Length: 333
Figure 1 (cartoon, helix red, strand yellow):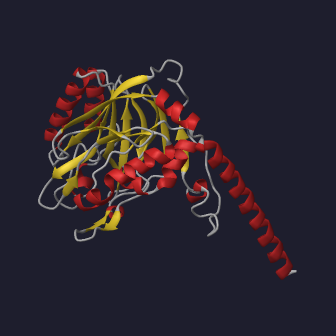
Figure 2 (cartoon, one colour; figure 1 turned 180 degrees about the vertical axis):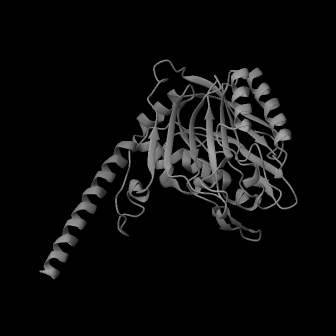
Figure 3 (tube, helix red, strand yellow; figure 1 turned 45 degrees about the vertical axis):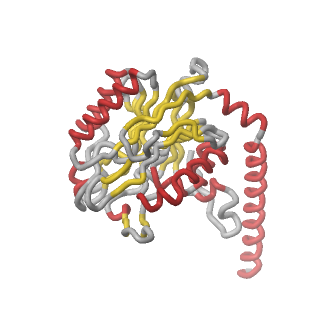
């Protein structure tokens, strides 16, 4: 489905779909709703990746085995799980196609452990030698890649008292909103800086019926201290979804440090899992019950109100367009 409405000052901020006029939406046929268990154990990894892909894979492999032993069926890794560059240009050098050897190792890991993996923020080879895609890859328990989401909102920010980031200088933004059905519910895929754009999450929930929002991240220490948890809880509350946010933590090298603090949040906005130390390597685990979503949404049916409001905004937009057209015809006649 392609949403392609022009933007006006009056509609900005009121009708979320209009904000994403050039964004495609991808959703797969439902395969799990009938057989899906109401309760499933999920995990959010917290780790400190570096510029050694083999060392990072060793850490990830250990954590997958640990999660499987603990009964986790769906495990989420943070952005840049397989590689964090120490020098400019290194990410481009290690970027690979999704079917390349690095991702195939992680697919094998999922298959051997019989576990679903969310691998957020993989350096996928881009459209040219100067750009990559920051890609969230979803792998099922048979080792098959089920979905890929390319980060839409790129981190071009002057962090207060820190440094300037320009992700767009080497990354091409995605153009598709992605949801996927899984044993853990209907998943909405995002990456890190997307978190600051609530319209994306509104669309995942109210247009594509997401139940669990995935936010693999590598927030900076400065922005994480200020905004990480409050933004995640806000996204959970306003969409009435579970949120699983796997985070990079601690110092990756002399130039880069991540905030950490992996969290799992329920649809009421309550943090239901976190590690005691927000910088340590480990897994925050929780048993999520999808019936909690239905209970909250039934008692507080905000979706019906939002759909009603969106309908009104569309009618307002079309009426305004009609009036403008009449005015133009009057002026040129």
